[in-house]
Image 1 (tube, rainbow, N blue to C red):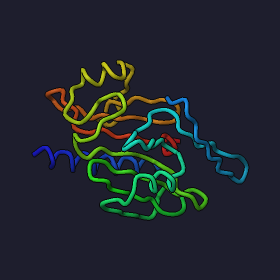
Image 2 (cartoon, helix red, strand yellow):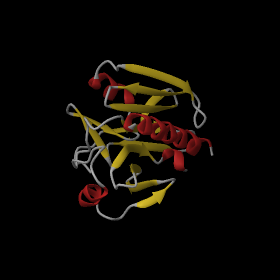
Image 3 (cartoon, rainbow, N blue to C red):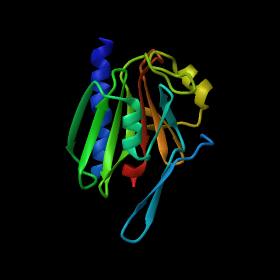
Image 4 (tube, helix red, strand yellow):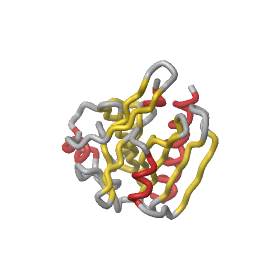
Length: 179
């Protein structure tokens, strides 16, 4: 039952990321993407996921992160409705890393937790409680589309909490599609 609920939540989360586009660490890794009239700085900031010592920050260049994470267990790509090019999803068992393409390079757009085998650097995982979330992140969240959302430096971390106050979904996302 939990797996079925999670699958539905994950599908809704992916749909919300797509529809949105259609409609703190001292270490900084920076990539600048030149636009026609301006440049956008992409650096590890805000909420950062970490897996096997690899920091996965939203809007960071994806190629070195995907290489460091190793061969994904599954892969999917689709034409982007927000940008020219492809949105790509790399499945690593307990989590998925999603990317968007901008001017020929891929950047991290999100991380979706698939089960309770991974946690945020603050120690929150699927199966923990809303109280655990508040203890780790504070009470400064907003409710958006049925999720409890914290936003910091161009990133969001989103939690879905069920009627028993148990966390059933955790997603990191870039705010680039919110604009």
